[in-house]
Figure 1 (spheres, helix red, strand yellow):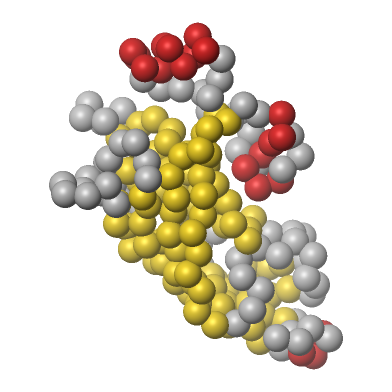
Figure 2 (cartoon, rainbow, N blue to C red; figure 1 turned 180 degrees about the vertical axis):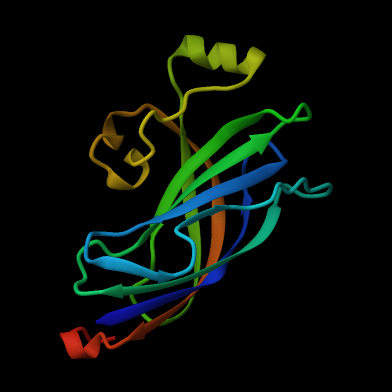
Length: 175
């Protein structure tokens, strides 16, 4: 079987309106992919930058997959959260990006977005906090119903990924 190694890190985030950010991440693959080692999902620590608007996480990612086909190539989905001074967590943004299909070192910038809700929900959010969240998080990477959402741009998440492909040439895939 062909193998894919993803080795890297979630470097950090910038452009979000709040500090004290952390990131929940996960990876989604098709049915032909089998995780041999590593964690399918995780969460970074909270970073509260004092002098800039950039949150640094340097959270490691180390995954090893085996596959019988290219269908369902891995996608990394992200949820960026803000923690306030009372320890309450509220959503700052959702995003996803495809894992690069070429071997080597890659720097990715993943744009994020958040649901806006109605004007009443936006007004309540400015006074009380919180805000709308997705009921089904798979909408982040599936795209089937995402076009119907009323969203706004959030910040960006930076990733560094090293991709190693093994035995793909035996299955007719040139790298």
